[in-house]
Image (tube, rainbow, N blue to C red; front, side, top):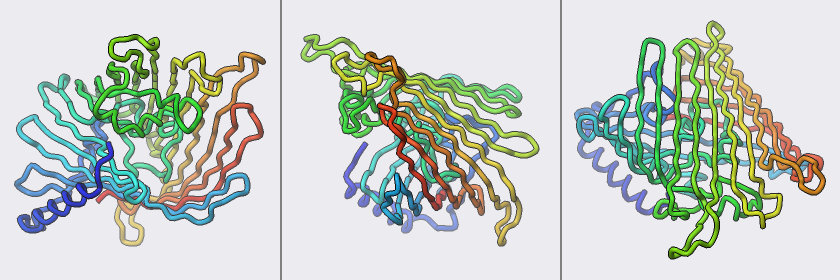
Length: 409
């Protein structure tokens, strides 16, 4: 949700002045939540924050910035420094079992400002709690668990940002809950919210492209089709095995009637996703994976470059190689990692020839990262990526390096 930068600046200046005037800095304390009994659905609340003593308010955030030098088919824009994003979040325990959390995100040095999350949670029972406001739709795992300091890679997964609409948030409401039993955890979320619109097939990409819906700020005020989007997820975690999640998001995306007059058939978009993460015992290798399938009812009048089926995903493998005291940092870690990813935006065959359609991409991203602590990561990535057009012409090749830092504060 885009908002005026002037209001943001005024708000935070006023808040900072209030804190400086009324709060003794010695009363601020860093709180890091226990991650041993959490699911991906807890990621939005499972963040290090500064608690202001004797008040219900906690504040925090994270920063991502990097340098990159990439080349595509021998052509490069040279060295680039990027201020990827600055996120600021505040939470408050309003009263017993009523809490509020908001997250403001500044992208590309303030070029885009959005309210990514702002909800009120009312806790009735561990298995039945109500949430309303601007929610992050829980499709897959990355959409919720996306904070930069948690990852060894400067870029977010392509499947989670250029196939699925990354960090997709809408105004909505629904239920969520969790249950613990010995080594097992179960959680679910179910929301009705704002929806997609015709931009997923009417966009500058000239293909079926779900992330285009994020560019429409009116989705926070009205639903294009008049029918809400449903998003649901179930997840199970065993503390010794790992977590697996199944999620679905779907609804009518097109404006099928105008002033009560039917102008088109109802056209659906359906998304299914599965995600998994685990840590191998003894060697402490962390593996996380996500795969999604998309089906869109595209009008027959559109050309075949607008695919009605898409799929893709990624696998991250992270291996600690050094852990201990490094340059006076206790519990510092050096990791080697690798990301494998694949996306096909147009699954199927040409009607005329029966040959496969292209519009796919794969990449491999080896990485080396240094963590002076669990909340800060310095990461060096190398990307090798190949992408083909719909006619399966020889792929364009992108390769190069990224060096960046991301930290909570």
